[in-house]
Every structure is written in structure tokens, then in C-alpha cells.
Length: 404
Ligand code: SF4
Image: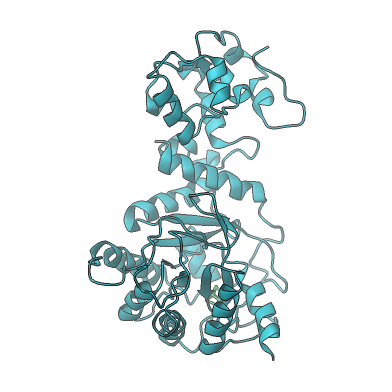
């Protein structure tokens, strides 16, 4: 098979991995004059960096021929897909070629398991090491870490990569056991723990930083019966236990030739979206898990509205808030106000009392925030009591002006 044929197969096979977006990566040493490229502090497959740049990565597998048989995976050993395998040299050549033509700003490399976890990890490392050492490549590299690989190999992966990720795959250990019998939750968590301690302990002054963009993971949503409370509970434990930069959620979609042990229908994409919104609330908005989603029968997020609006409508007694007096923590709970908006409000109100015009100037959607805020020229006395408030606040074609 020629390189183009392999690329078609192995880029397509990689699209199922969502754990590929970056933030917070430090620039590599720019004193290396022979080096080519720059990771620019972050970058990933058609994603936006914190500074607003859209960056792209070559996102491929080394091979889609895997000796494991995870039921949810198109590359599993019992699948009938066409198989291909790049050599290390081919991936290096492709990466450099695309990079020099400005098609990409880095590489995301994962793989099916070839022979053994150690062998696979060694091959992935060889790609990154060759790019860095022989070609002085300073672009972004995200390497997949294979659980059960030797701890020294896991550590070496982080020496060459900007970001590393070990996929947790499923929210519950029993689901992993059922759907991915050769994967072990213990091995996955051990690899995450090792990465966390090496990232924290690596003395940055001694040469190459260790995985400066940290570690991430991916969880498949809707392949098992786990509800949103279980999924978010697992995320909370991963963020706190392993200091992950991100948990990525990937809505399950039936694969060709699927196992009977999997749902026949895809998980709704809006569910994936709601999980991202909830994840954000947990990390940046001061919400606790049980405020966003309860356990038991109430363990699912609303698909109709975002979780912050759902919380606010259940707690109308906490509103309206005076935009000129409320604390940062209180303002962060107002639907329609993001972290950046809240910080701008706090700065602006030091100078003068804010009015509706000021919010509009800060590009805050008055339609969304008006029921929840008091301003000198706005007092939403009856808005919060309206039975149709939820309907009015949901995004839709016919938006009514609540300021009227
Ligand atoms: S280890 Fe499992 S999830 Fe990974 S490529 Fe192989 S079959 Fe797919």
C-alpha cells in the first residue's frame, strides 16, 4: 500500500479519538537555532488556542491493526476494516513534509496495540524522539500513552511530547471490564498517576520540560448505561486525582459491524455538549457536582437547556442579583455571564455604577441575563416568576426581548 493509501486509512481511524486539544503548553526552547517550527504555546487538530488561533495537527494512528478487541472500537481485532501500518520513518517524513508546507502545526499520534503495550509505546516514542532529536522539530506533539507499558516508557513519552493522554474510555470500571476485557482500570489509573507525579516533579531547569501541556483523557458517552452523574463523578475524581488538563467526552456512535453488546443508536450529540458545559461549571464556576446533577433517577442533565440555566431556574430565590454589588462567585452563577464577562464587570464597576448600556458594551447578552440581574435602570420584578421563563430563555428562532 502506498503512503497515501495508508494515510487515508490511518487518519480516518484516528478520528474516533477526541482526546486531542491542547492548552497551556510552554514554548519549546527557541535558542535551538537548528529547530524548525514552534508549538506556539498550544495547538491541536482544528482547534482554537487560548490566544484565538486556529491550529491543526496531523492526527493519525501508527496502525489500526490491534491485538485487543474492545467492543466499542472500529479497530478491534475482530473488526473487518482495512488495516494499514506506518513505519516510524514514514510518520516522521509525513509530519515534516506537512509541517514545512504549513498544513499542520504538530502531530497527534496514537496506535492500536501492536504485539504488546511495550512494543507499541516504544514505536510511538521512536517517532517523537526522531522528530525532536534528529530533525529538531519544535512543533506540538501529543502522544497516546499505552496503559500497561513499562513505567520507564511512559516517562520517556512525556520527555518528547507536549501532551500525553491515557484514555479512561468508560466511566465505570465494570463497563470497561465488559466492553474492553484486556484493558484494566488499575493500569490506566497507574499510568495517569505516574504521569502526574513526573509532570509535577520533573525539574524544568534541566533541559527538556516533561509534557508541558499536561495530560488529558477521553471518555465515551452512551456506550454503557452510565448516567451523567456517574460520568461527571468520574471526571471530578480524575481532575482531582491526576490533575488532568481536560477530560474529553465522545458521544458513542454505532460502528460498522458492531457487537451486539452495544446500543444500536448513537448517543445524542447534545448530551456530549451538556457534559462539556457541566465540566466547565465544575472547574471554573465554583459549582459542586450535586448542584448540577443529582444521583439516582435524576442523574441526567437536561438536554433542553444548559446546566447553568437549569440550576438558576431551580433556584430562583437566589436572584435577581445586583450587578454592582454581587460577589464574583455569585455573578459566576448568572446564566449568560462567562468568566471573562464577570471579570470585566468587576473591573468596570470600580469606576462607576453599571447600567444596561454598559452590559451591552461588554457584549453581554441582555436577553439571557436580564431576568437574573438588577441594574440602576432595570429591575426584573416579575420576570423571575413567569411560568414561561424557561421557554423564553431557551435558544430558538423567535427570541422575545425581556427588557421590553
Ligand atoms: S486497544 Fe481497544 S480501543 Fe485501543 S485500538 Fe485496540 S481495540 Fe481500539
